[in-house]
Amino acid sequence: MWDAVFRSTARDPVGWLAAGHGQGGRNTVIIKRDPRATTRAAWLRARAARYRLRCIGRVSGPRSKITMARLLAEETLLGSLPEPAADAALPVRAEGLGGHVVWLRPRSTDCLALEFLDFGYHLPPAGQVGPIRHVAVFGANIGLLLADLADRHPQARLLGVEPDPDNAALARRNLARYGGRCSLEEAAVWHRAETLTLGWESDAWGQILISPPAGNGLAARARHYNAVDAGDLLAAFTGSAPVDYLLVNIESAWHEMLQNGHWTKTVRCIKIEIQDHYDDAVPLLQALGYQASLQRLSWGAFATGIRPAQTQQDTGRVPYPRQMERGTTVAHGRSRLIQAHANPGSAR
Image (cartoon, rainbow, N blue to C red; front, side):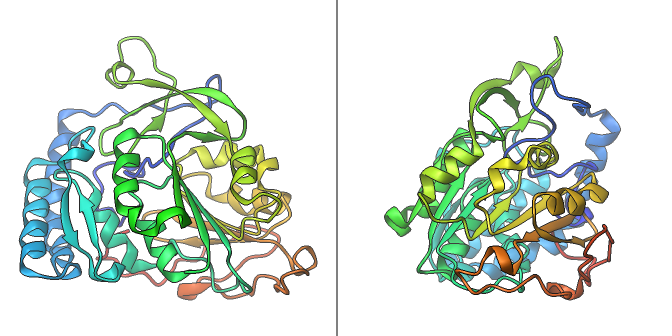
């Protein structure tokens, strides 16, 4: 989900919720790394260091700057741990989050999660108008996206969903200042209630969905989760009200989720980070009744869907405009990939 300079594989390093298909699904891919990939990962981390130094400017106060420099140095020189523990997190004061303290772990991707906020890809599209009262994030990671959305929409209630225990624990810590307005569900979300097998992949940011073969190293760290039905989860969150904005960061699992997208019926605006099946994103959203667009970036894309005006008359919303943020053209009726005006040397 970041610019290629930060990435050691062709896959999204985030893995905030799941990557692949459900048990018994098709084309589940498990990546095995070889020594050359490990060497390349180290080289990419070193190359990225000059860009990552900007993170020091994103925190305020001498103590926070020293802590951030330490975090960046350890991650650059030693790489990320396969499962960074929540109790290892250190506090820094983040300027982009109102100067509040956030907790980040050494040798993790948490610093990148903080940097990602600056690019605004997690925000509702410019074409969405009307009040935003209910916001949900599938794949909440350590809670920084939720925190930023909570600050930008002070009247909204927010729900984050994150299956990884350490990520979820750290997210609760980072969201504590919002009290009951922002809740975190430690769960895997799926298009139906089902037992899923999740585990950590190299460079992952959390649990990814796998179908483990015997003897695979990833399978040795696998865990079984009782996934919750996305529709039931959203209904419990909003009651009879709609979900005004849903951000989805769940690796390749988005594809099967949209193929079985009955759970989106109460979602007025959805934004999905994607790394594959680019040509399928717009048609799948349109089949669910959305006016859809695709914003293509150097590292992946975001697919966005907004319900047309006739289905939102109670809020006075209008159809999605033909121009998306950051200069990306909206394509109605077919998928049309337009390269966004992104800084090729930036993250995410």
